[in-house]
Image (cartoon, rainbow, N blue to C red; front, side, top):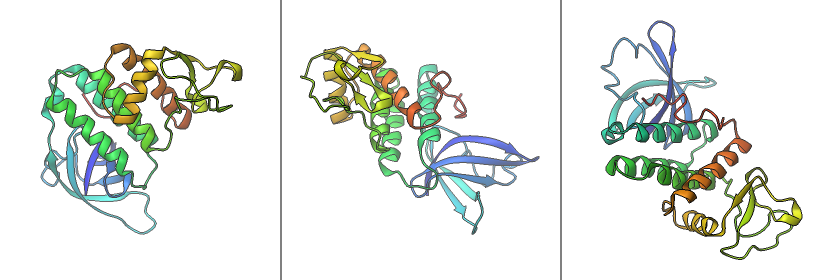
Length: 240
């Protein structure tokens, strides 16, 4: 199976518990015996950022898989050329770690994460914030938490395109003033750009849309999971 390493934790004198996001099982944890003493069986395959190919064994009623061997499937050395790229990659891995359900395949999220890392690796001068915003909207959509940005989630009243609106990510999207509004005021132009991001998956064209988009995404993720908005920048991902 193919996987991303989300984080690693030392276990005993020589073992590692590795948290993985896989294309086959979704998010799992696996025990890698003697991984801290010998690299022969894993050959650099327990590093974050890269796509790795692993062989695991699932034992009945065991909480952890057993990681038998691994190889590097697709390295992304371009992500190491800028601190901003490393931080964004770590932030994306953190989001997936905190939001993906355990042992549940999430193919849309898998492809979104893979494409996000590929884009930044292949174009290291890219606008990191815009790419992260595009990935974030694909993530919440893939998990079923997409924000409604065209009409009020409370009364259903449509909001004309290009009109500024209040958005309440914790309630699922746009909330009109009559229904109490929301904590984030989204200018009309920004809302139009973010709707296009949600429709196409392309990065937003303006820095303002990237900033506001990330604020909406992190509030939505925090509402549905244990994402900490104050510490999600690369925390616990192993990215350096």
